[in-house]
Length: 115
Length: 109
Image (cartoon, each protein chain N blue to C red):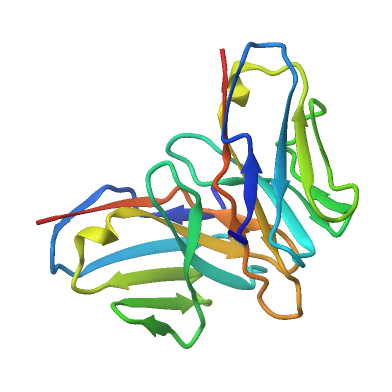
């Protein structure tokens, strides 16, 4: 399967713990995005990378959240001191920016439950 | 006001029906427009891009009115497999996608 992959698919944690999610984009895609989706809502943008540079961060991304894409390939999203309000589906998407419309392809998501 | 607003759902229609979804966006700087489809507990998948001239893909027709900042999706001859949530999406140049809340469609036999 050459699509976007995310690990783990599900994560249950206790409030106050740190969690880290991984996203592997489609090979050769230079852009990588993180979104968060809660029940009954559309995905909300968190942050995005072009290659290894983090170019934009949403106001939703509090200082407990950090994302990296160290070699311009896979990315990690870490949430420190998790809160119950962090429970959501975390979606990763990738695209190839080529001057035209860079279609974003989504991974299956990581579902986080904070107890 | 949310940047992208969609018809509240759910839409419950019989097989074979024609159904239309509407969407408005608030930022006139938006440059690209899409409809994504999301099945229950799955990731969003691109259904179609939306162009100013309107575009069609089989039973699906999308329209864009930049002056009114309005996007629509028409599904003809609904199938059971069309049951899903349809997300209206806009994008400014070089930035992320902005999603509406989605409209749920349920097609019954």
